[in-house]
Amino acid sequence: MTKSVRVALVGLGNVGRSFLALMAEKATLLREQYGLELRLTAAADSSGAVMTESGIDPTALRLHKERGGRTGDFLGGVPGMSARKLVAQAPADLLLEASPVNLQTGQPGLDCVRTAIRRGMHVVLANKGPLVHAFGELTQAAAEAGVGLAYSATVCGALPVVNIGRRDLAGCTIRSVRGIFNATSNSILTAMARGQSYADALRQAQLEGVAEADPRLDVEGWDTANKLVIIANSILCQPATLADVTAVVGITGITAEQIRDGAAQGQVVKLVATAERDVGGYRLAVRPEWLPADSFLAQVNGFEMGIVFETDIMGLQMYKVEERGPVPTAGAILRDVINIMRGSQI
Image 1: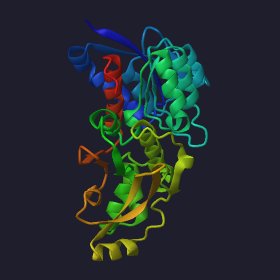
Image 2: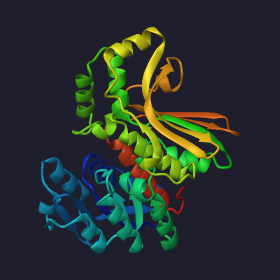
Image 3: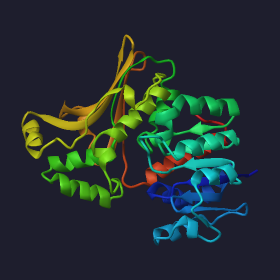
Image 4: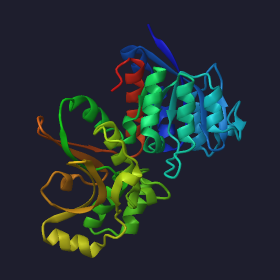
């Protein structure tokens, strides 16, 4: 039997639109392999919202957005309707939250997630803000409501960092986590090592759809710090917020001359997130590090991201992924949807 799942999508940027494309592209696979039929019944962006029990054509909405249209102006849309109000009223079984990250408050995503859980809706997050601000609250509320809360897309996109840490390293004591979690910063540093200027490298990342128009969260280290906080809470079982990250230093101070000097000494600079186990828990930090050129993280290049887990009983585990554009992150959202709806949430 095929299970119909009514989906509400908040956020129609690059990732949200890519998910709409996957809804159409993967419809047959979802039905035949997983017994699922995803039906878009509500969507919202900053302009307004649209919802209908009969369903919204995801391809038509995606094309409307890509042509410069606003969701509030889409057929049947309500200009000015807030995402939170949409979630409070939407005929939906599952919320996909992919709105922009708000470091200061986590809003409006945080209230959307709270509202969805109170209504008994499953939640899949691509937006890191709600988790960074209220991880404990949201996970507890979801457990008490008996709904799924999944967020593997928030850490390294398609690379299943959260799934590996929570499922595959079960029984381990994780001694340390070290990773390159931001493809924008990594692509810039790699391009600068090839002789490109910072400005040209950033422009290329923006053209690739990896870097945002305002890249400060990426290049100043805050996107990486967000992901480190989620890892601390979800994998290391250490309650943490951004205030617990002792250092957040980005790549804007790295010069071409420093990169050349480092290369002459057999070193490569990378923006590295670290969680080091100590007596009182894990020490969290984000900063550029000069690494031996033949080390694993030094060889995570371009639009790649990577992570190294040092464990007591499962050894040193290293993973990396190459992501160009928003499709892999949308794929991670789809992965979470499948796992929740099939009862196999990590």
